[in-house]
Amino acid sequence: MNALANDLAAANVGSIFLYTHEAHPGENYPHLTSMVQKAAHGRALRDVLGVTRPIFLDALDGACHRAYGSMPNMTWIFNRAGIPVYKSDWTDHHSVANALTYFLDVNQRRRGRERLVPFRVERLDYRTSDTEAFYAGLARSGPKAVDEFKKAAL
Amino acid sequence: MTTPELLATYNYDSFTPEKVLRWLNFAASPPLGEPAPDFPLWDLDGRPTSLREIWSQHLLTVVEFGSFT
Image (cartoon, rainbow over all chains, first blue to last red):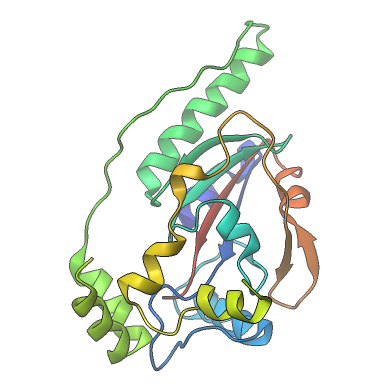
């Protein structure tokens, strides 16, 4: 997602990471109890995991996250008027790139005076399932996060 | 739900189905094509902004939700 953000910045596409709550709290990154702690975890996201996009914090009660469906790693695309044009319950850079390519083409067609009206479409996209990387992420949070995920069997 | 209860349950302290699944509500999230709700946000230094302020700066804005864990 960082590379995609860099690639499309010149096309006037902005990209941010919105920090929510700890999906898998562990010994190293426990559940959040303050905005100071939330900012510290956000800096770890930047410094340890290498997120280069601007990181913004939701309120501690997750007001924004909850209003948008509370999925642990979802992605939304908004136009300049605040209209969501894409939402996915999981983040996959291929899916996001595909959508952005389409919407940038729509913008070009509008510039060419083509008359366009919106319609709704549903589509099932596919993401890579990397179990090893996922468990490595849990381990960064701590053994508690690994154990709880195994026990939850979700 | 009181504010302390909301803070504690949203920021759950352990990953169990009972604590996690109650929040997942993507089916009822804002619809595409209609104005989306705005919310206050803060940068890592505590400076306030808002989702509206962010999405108004570009032709399109990608917002990835998530956390370290």
